[in-house]
Length: 289
Image 1 (cartoon, rainbow, N blue to C red):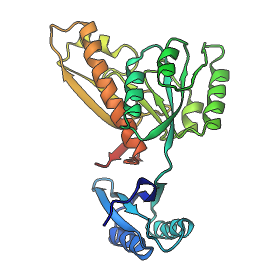
Image 2 (cartoon, rainbow, N blue to C red; image 1 turned 90 degrees about the vertical axis):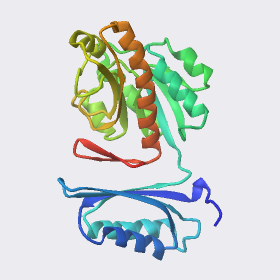
Image 3 (spheres, one colour; image 1 turned 180 degrees about the vertical axis):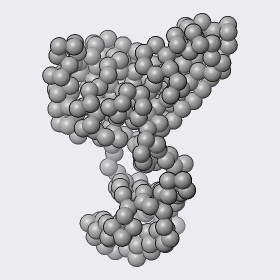
Image 4 (spheres, rainbow, N blue to C red; image 1 turned 180 degrees about the horizontal axis):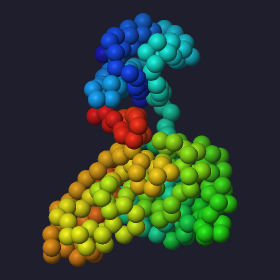
């Protein structure tokens, strides 16, 4: 068989209470509509009694329309008390990258995007400072500044939300954005804001984690990408990584090592989200290979 084009590939993500017959029901449904399953990955959390599955399938030869297929999935979902999400191939997600003055994560994301490693569209770079406009200009990405003070924070966030919605943004990426988003902002985009925290959470939350790590004399430092929630630095974790350090490392050494981790961890999290590989349940995630 020939390899299907990306426009004809769809991805189905499901989660529901674990029970018999789920895999068979979904496979039979897709087969009955003429879809060809390309790969399927599943996970059962025995402690929580929850089932999770990701199915990629070719719909180039389906003999019904997409609306009918979605309706059929909905009927199966109702039977199994299933939450589900269907992503159609060819519908690229649109990103808004929020930054302040640190440029390493922004550069890395834009380079990977240009190289085709992250299949999305970068709609805008948003900042509370003008410093990184030359970086966005270098990659031909719109750059917009919303200066924020304690007095105007609510008004500026309202303007940012208006702009995000107008641009049809699917995912907000906080690439070392040194502002705490309000609960109102975060609640508007549940599971659609990814933050990179320069620490191996839950250790060293909040500000200056490398200084905290140095003071504690740790032998490992890390970085954590997670979905932002109204609880600061406590959202569902998507990815983490670590690097070794020693008593010889200064705070500057930890910062340097940490920035390398931040770039890689954030890029992986963004790519997995864009590729529809993540399911959130409770305050945890399932990340499919």
